[in-house]
Length: 545
Image (cartoon, rainbow, N blue to C red; front, side, top):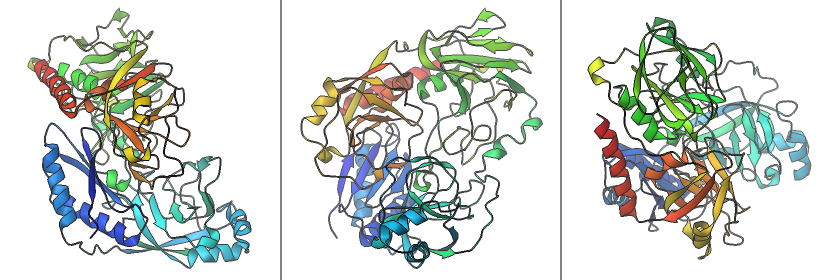
């Protein structure tokens, strides 16, 4: 066996690399290593993700030492590679026409008829190499080189769920409606991902897939993410709040959806986990309770029963029945009281904790809203006027805390500490220096998935492209344009751009308080400094209790 290389990916991730090829033998080994790590994970391991040629391990640096995780990865890689038997999956496809608007173009590219192009696609058996991009999205290969047309130069804004696409030698099925740049040659009505099923994904790494042509399929199916269950059952709760106005972008968030990145499901959760946890602690909630994440322009919320609330994070001018609400302090709300927000004073995201927590139904172990994936919260979307949110049982009065002094919110920008990323060999030596000496601006194209930055262009090694790999929280990706992207909570689980650096866990809450127009500077630190900063943060949270 070819020796593996294990690289650090910030303070909470490790990446095991095999040969830099797309090869069934190499891929089979990554699947086997990942399977062994999932069977015998060290305490503190949150996720294990296999890709084409790597295995990523995400862990809690406060619960397990990096060397313990590294040793487990080394043992897994040294063990004889077990033959992980994938299942056989048949997928019915309607090729061409409205179902496959790019089939004629692919046929012209190949110099064959559309019928022949469809046959070349359906006659092959494809291996599932990895899952990523969207929950349940399987990267399959290998497409017949005759029809291996590259991606579109301009991605579509809307690709229907079930669309079957080609991107070079890869093929795949879009699990839900989303943007996408693959060439669409057909469509299936198979449910590729369904959070309500015991096995959420139709495909898994190592599976063998065949596409069978059908003259006509019925595509009129309701969405099946399982998110709609979150809104049901709310009438059974004895306590509620009503959304009168939703604000700019208000969502239900918790600590995130760990344990499902191998299925392509993003972790998500609060962008500023520190403020989220502080708000929960102030009202006596468990740290895992769901809060409202309020972005820039806040909502108007009416309390339909007595409650204790606390707002932490950004100061967005909150007022309760016309009286100012102090940030980082618990206060009593009577039934009928209305919470409103005014002008932004500092920070970008405020967290509203209510005693008992927002008690929508958990989806895959979390109430966090992922709008991209349509998971969690209320129907997997931002809150809307008229939403009626259930609350959990009220907190015992003696668990409510006093006001606290919280970290100051950024005003205009922030300096973030980083560790070298897992893909240093994709960059010339001076690229890391360029990253550190540049002041970047957060552009309006930024969202909860990632902040697109402009400033200096970070150089990459010429003529070298990366095979899609795991994405890490706080990773700084550099696409071919050279303009970095800071990966945030809703990041995709995999990506095709190398990560030059990783923002440390302790500074991600600060990053979560930035908005378009704010600046970012990066400063390298040591792993010891990163862990010390995280321990200090957790100590402040414990002191609230």
